[in-house]
Image (cartoon, rainbow over all chains, first blue to last red; front, top):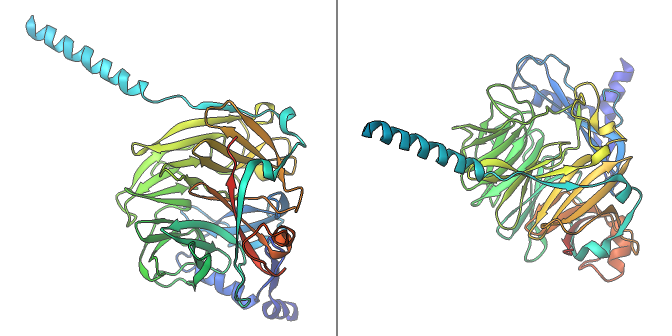
Length: 87
Length: 360
């Protein structure tokens, strides 16, 4: 429980392609999820989009965006460029 | 007897007119790119780009561009879409200065959660929110006008004189791969059904490309065909053949991540210029560019490098005859301090790069 609380407060730090540090708090991430799930209570499908370095070469990371649709049953999965085990 | 002859004449006339219509559809030109011709080859940036302009995006250090997702032009205003912060930046291209920065994150009216594409037409800006299946319409001053919900999930859009074109990432029997709607998302027409479904991952490339002459081109994700939008339909224009490096026809995109493939050439970005076609692709973890003259007589392929200053060449968007990329001030500092750019910038800044290609 303490770990969850720490994550919720600490959030995640992501890096944009230019290497700048951006911070999303756990509450902000929950807000994004809640906003995106406002349309439908059903499941999701997720698309992973490759991330590239400054020269356009793949850096092994992906961003993910979930969307709703008929018959979709997957969990909500959304993140900025990061290493992702789902791919 | 006369009536039979007349009906026969009508039949022959009808058939010949049908044949004429079919004859107007030209087969796609084939652009061949062979591995031996490009692998590990480098092209000097100066050889393929005649001019570079820079725009400093960090005049006010309290605002940072998290991730540039799309770019579009409306008259002299250039709009930049930051999909992470759901912010739209407006730049006056005459002064190269930032005019507005507007964040519209949320699920209220004319707000978006994860905007992934935008396109401008006739003084209006159309922004596509993928997870919400929503299109938000703003005017050039960023004032909200209206929004509408799509019945499909789109990955890209293009605003045209006759409505909006969408790339539907989940085509089915009801909605094809490319759908045209009016400016309110109704009156939908299926224009094209892609041969292959989108897989587990994609490059996130632009599907639609607008060139200076007003033509719109389309290249589906990780596919080898290029289409032109003409007479309200998409017609094949080019087929890029990577020979032995082409993905097999029976490649299963639902079981494998195409973006992880190293043995195949994975097409990404497309740029169409009056005298030249530029396409980039990934092969064995490197990004290559092919520059092909429109008549197909000249072609060069390789990794594009600025050997003098190492300025990153990674354009992702096209505005008129200009290719647009972005990088950090740190990555551009060598280029800028050589007096080639219009501005100087700090290492922490973001720099928009405008590349004007040199025709072959």
